[in-house]
Length: 219
Image (cartoon, rainbow, N blue to C red; front, side, top):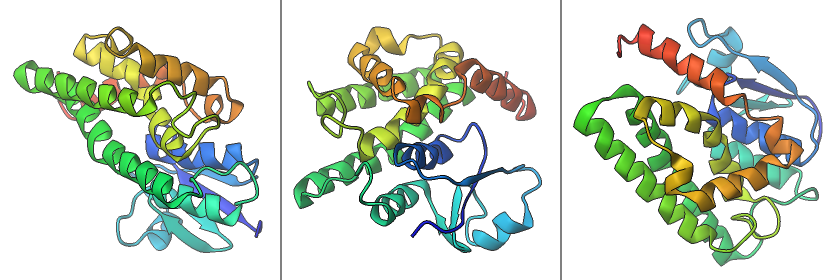
């Protein structure tokens, strides 16, 4: 099931990082193609005509869109290497619940932290930390959300670490001070080559966000 594998992506995208981590964790070679989101390629528009967004995973000419669906697809196609999604139906349901929670909360609240000020930003920071604390509760004393090995929830959440520094700088707060267990988990994840090589430098992401703030007139 190897064949031709291409990932259309944009370097600071935490969603694209999910697919990069999953592919790296399983040792699957692929071609990475960086997209210019201001001038989207014909291939991107052809492969994702509905949303016209990255990431898009193209396997033997067939597109798989949406990052969580891509991680599921990668895990199903290359199921014999480093399984990510639990085989137990209940554990699988729990993992999907938390991935859905991450998708509905973390990106949106993080965006509010760097896009807003005053009371709106304060509320976003408060809710963001509350969400991380809920995730810390789910992690418990486990090494990873997946137990002793990197799993579906880990792959879905850890890419946002690359944006944490920008959130902290824009929101003037410390995530580690509020959620030390979360940062300890991140550090364990970052010891894995599949994660460390898939996440961009935090300061580079912060510079990218400062650029976006200028573009959108957010000061």
